[in-house]
Every structure is written in C-alpha cells, then in structure tokens.
Image (cartoon, rainbow, N blue to C red):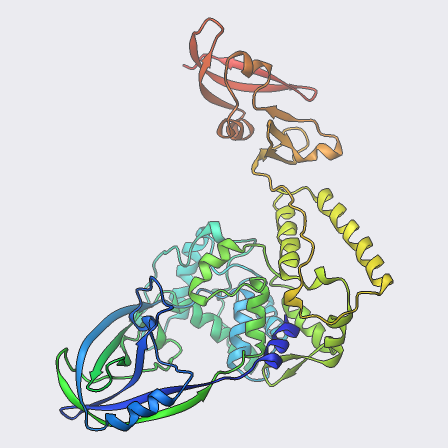
Length: 523
C-alpha cells in the first residue's frame, strides 16, 4: 500500500487549471464569487454546486471575460440556505485513537499510543484498549452513566452534558469481543504528559457523545453578471449556529460569512482576476490514514460512512487493532519504510522487495482481506478451519516453488496485479450447539449438522427425514434452533396419509448418535 502510494505520487503529472474570481459590491455589502459554467458530466446530481465547474484547462476565455467585467452590473439570481447537523465522531476503538493522536500531536507513533493506552488500562483508568469496536454493549448503560456523572464535574458546560441511551453509543450487535474505549470510575490524580494527553482524548470523546449536536448553515449565492452570458458566479458561506459538542475540545470553526442579500438584489463588479493553479499529487500515508486503510483493507471509506463501512467490512481488514501498530513499527525497524515527519514513505530496500518478490498474492489487498475475513469466520465457527488450512498449505508450497524458480522478477505496480482468487469458503449459518460434542451446529443443504463431523461427531437433524417426510413436512431453521436451545418446539401443519392435519409439540432423544422423534398433542 505504501509502495503504491509512493508510485502514484512519483508518476503524478501536475496539470495547470485556471479560475476567474470576482469581487462584488451590493450597497456596501461585499463578497467574492468564482466564475462557473454548467458541468455537462454531472448527471442526476441534486447538489447545486456540483452541477457547475469552476476549474478551466484554458485561460483564454477567462482572460477575455476578465477584461470586460469591471463596473458591470450584477444580479443575485439564486440563494440557498441549508441547515446541517454535525454529530461527534464515534467513541474510540484502538485504530481511531492511534490515528487521532498521531495526526494531531508530534512525536507519537501508533505503537507508542498503544503502550500508553495499555498502561492507562493496567492502572484501571480506561477500559480495554485493544478493541475494534466503536460502540458500547447495552449492558454498560448504567456504568456509562455513572462514569459520565464523575468525569463531567467542574466543566464550564457541565449543564449541557446530559446522559441518554442512543444506538450511536450503545449497540450490542456492533460490538466485537470488547466495547469501545471509555474512561472508568477511577480518576487519576497524577499522570505523565503522555498519559494525560491520551487519557484526555478518551474522556473528551466520551463526553462529546452526550453533548448537544453542533449545527451550522451553508449558504450558496449565485450571481449573474452582464456580459458573462455562459456562466454565473458562485459564492459559498458557512456559519456555525450551535457549537454543541465542539465546546469540549474548543474546535475552531471555519466560517465564511456572506452578506445578507436577497434574490433580485443588484450590485456591481469591483474587480476581478484570473488565478493560475496546478493539480496536486496524492498525499503520502500518515499513520492515521494508513491505519484507516488497513482497517478497511484499502477501501476508500469516508468518516461519515463509518458505521456502514464497519458493517460491510467487518473482519475484512489487514491485521487487527492489536497488531496494526506492530506491523507499521516492524516495517520501520527493518528499514522497509521510513517516517518523514508524519509521512510514511517506502525505502529503496522496500521498493526492491516489492518489485522482485514474485508472489503477487501477498500484495493483493482483496486476497489478504479475504484471508483475514475467513479467519474471523473461523473464530465465529461459521467456516471449517481444516478447509482454510488446506488452502494455506497449497498456497505456501506454490509460493515457495515460484520464488525458487526466480523467473518472474519484473517490477510492477502492485495495484495492477490480478492475483488468483482465494477460493470461496462456505460460510455457514449457526443454528445452535451440538448436544453430543458441544461444537457448533450449522445449516447445510439437507439438514442441520455439527461442525465436529471431521472429528467423528455424526449429529444431524435432517430437514426431511423419514418421519417428517411421512407427514409431508420439513424441519425449518426456526424449529431447529428452538429444539437445540429448549429441547422442544411446537410445529404446525403435519399431514397424515389420509389427509388429516395436526399440530404437535416436537422433541427428540438420542439413541447413540441417532435422532428419535417424539410427537405430543399440544395442550
């Protein structure tokens, strides 16, 4: 990933573009606008500003317009004011905490942040830090309220901090093995500078969840100028109306205040100019952006899509919260990459390895992500580990043979690699626990069987064995779950050979590993 990013930067060709900027005066109310024309490529876009383009490859037309604009009459032809709400970022998981600290403060690495967080945890000041989750389990509601009552005391906006249970903070379905990182009841009396900085970040992020939502207004003015018949001048303003949770960290708000003018008001052009600019190459990875890319396996997910991304890409990642920092540290200590200020760049040693190693699957994000996802599924008992191990065994043998052959040593951009696909491991739906060996029972095509079958367990509930077939009925997934959980369930719609329908309380007993069904008339 770092190599590819460096190659993108190296191969990037800057191209010039031009903008025409105009200053207006409407009865002593002044503002700027950028010349824009309709963007023919924008289809089905409801965002007004994106239907226009304000960057031009040639400056000839802009220069011609610039010559005639001064003192021309201008009219405001459209005004749009949109109120928007801003929610705080979610509670910290480890990757988010590392990204936040390393991007905001100098001298911190993700590995250092993990060690500081671990020390805070061992001293019982914060909850378990090596977590992937950014929400809390719903069983922690009362504990979170108690902690909030303690950590909010003495703050100037204390009366604005109000506890409430919301799905943004409490959602058991989205918790992996551990909940998000929050402070505990134990308040530290004395902390070192590093510990205080990380602890404060965790406390602040926790408090933000219970503060008012921030609100701002975005204003768009569209101005028409005599003589500029092909386009309009667009101005954008932003005013923070409610500071809300931003009070916690005293965030700066980027305000561009536009004058209060109305549609059909008129004014004049004071001055105008054509500015020459160039496109900028992609930015190198920082620890924050690299951790984020590792977490989503290179998928470009915006922060405001975070919850959706977490659901879609759960388990589909490079490493885990506990191992990503160590991976980056190891790349640095082995001199495959180096840190330039906050930027991570590939060394000549790293480039050489990437360009000569012929096992391209190891550089394919999709392949690596699916390996990690499969491991996650094995942990949940929905994939058979022996199938996965067979694949790994075959992969290692083939890879070593390829390296020994040594003929495929052509430098290549790894993003263009099309690696052989990891075979599709069947992901089973978990139904319950085996009454014989206590392993997981999953749904198969013809029945609900135990994943311990490779160790000799023969337990299975057939969807339509001879008993069910004789009554023209199939064992459903819902019924199978109930049978494994409670030992019995009510099933409706059995039909005898002479057409009589009946319902029954169904249970089973095991004779060895053979299932014997019991039917009782419901009371």
